[in-house]
Length: 548
Ligand SMILES: Cc1cc2nc3c(=O)[nH]c(=O)nc-3n(C[C@H](O)[C@H](O)[C@H](O)COP(=O)(O)OP(=O)(O)OC[C@H]3O[C@@H](n4cnc5c(N)ncnc54)[C@H](O)[C@@H]3O)c2cc1C
Image 1 (cartoon, protein in one colour):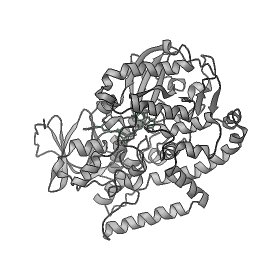
Image 2: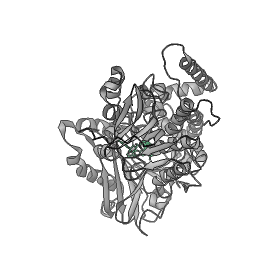
Image 3: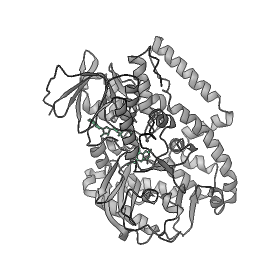
Image 4: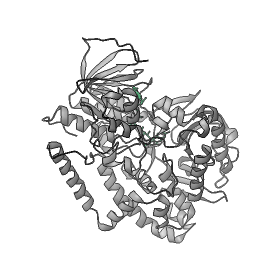
């Protein structure tokens, strides 16, 4: 039923109303207010942060509920918004990744040990590793730079918008031409090949390919043998922690510490943030947005709107159908959302002891991203199983135990673990509901870790499980998609969310995209929020000196 609207003619009209207080909404709002605009953020949940929040999930145990590890957060955003001054502290993991194997072997990477560890499996791969890292770094550097630029947008005709896009395309071309030929070839490989094909050209050892290949299926409901998966691997490689490229880390206090620092920065610049404020409808007059109607019936007026919510949700649920060009709406309905993710938070009485590396005293491997997924073939089988059955009976799980690095999350001696489980179907076959299957799948995920760390299951004293359906209900992530839409070639760069709308502007006057459905896509980056703020400022304050 549409909300009963309470018109309030004396209410303030904000320059910008941001729909959703996820990290990108907060970043966008902070930049705009810093430039002197009046900005209001409306967030449906009781706390801001979207998928980057810390909450108590079991008495005495807090954890990053959804997103759980940090790397992609853009250093410019951290510096511009002074997030460290607002309380953000990020620490590096003591080891990057730990891949225990069924035969008791393992691979433990990071902190100077990677080459020696790889040599255990293949001296040839160890030789190749430096060259691979150097090559990937060059390409990741380019991607990192492109993350803060609007991609060239496809526009009709040769007006000023056409000219602007021509300049943008030329500048992108120049940037890419700046890469040597081999790097350009590598970039093409990464955009077109499967992760399996790409990695097999460099390495022979299955555990190593599994360790690197895991990044290609994180939040990507696909087999690592599917073309295009190599790009997702690259997407996870363009981050850094405290200036260390490619590293992953932990925000003290959990991912919520990132968004709390962003909210503080935004508030300091004058942003009004309201939680418990669910937008029910975008209001349009004479082909321009004029504000929103909240679920409680109130109206909040804005000269422009910046949508941080998933764009499929925005266009198929919050806008009147007849307000949108039919081809646009049809494409949006087909926008692929559904990353195949299942997320658990566990309260543990003790640290796990792995068969591959026994002992319950904290070791470097406990602070790593622990990957259960010993080979690319295992990952492929997991995906095929999920297609047929709804989830894989031998699933791929990444476990991170942040309490090893952060004693604010669990009582003394106890721990919290994040389980990020890949390859569950966004919707179950045969009309089965995730609400009916969730606990069975949660048991399976714990049992899967237990196979590599016997006794793990009995150390679990509390748990929270989030199925794709829960992720949609709780955070508005359509199909449970962690990235607000697949990172497939047809939904990236100039095609995100679709050709003609890559410049953060929607099809209705005054409506902007500031969430992960816009370039460069998902992850806790702050980049879409930053780039959308730039587009909004270009339109609202074209002659202002405040630039980003
Ligand atoms: C399980 C999981 C694990 C992940 N792990 C990682 C990780 O480890 N590292 C990483 O970098 N990234 C990770 N990601 C991805 C990353 O968290 C997201 O891509 C990113 O947080 C999205 O940010 P956003 O601001 O664009 O959108 P969101 O965080 O989705 O924010 C959108 C906001 O809009 C609000 N909203 C929805 N509907 C309405 C409405 N009608 N009215 C008002 N408000 C509304 C939502 O409540 C939400 O707060 C993970 C995501 C998930 C779900």
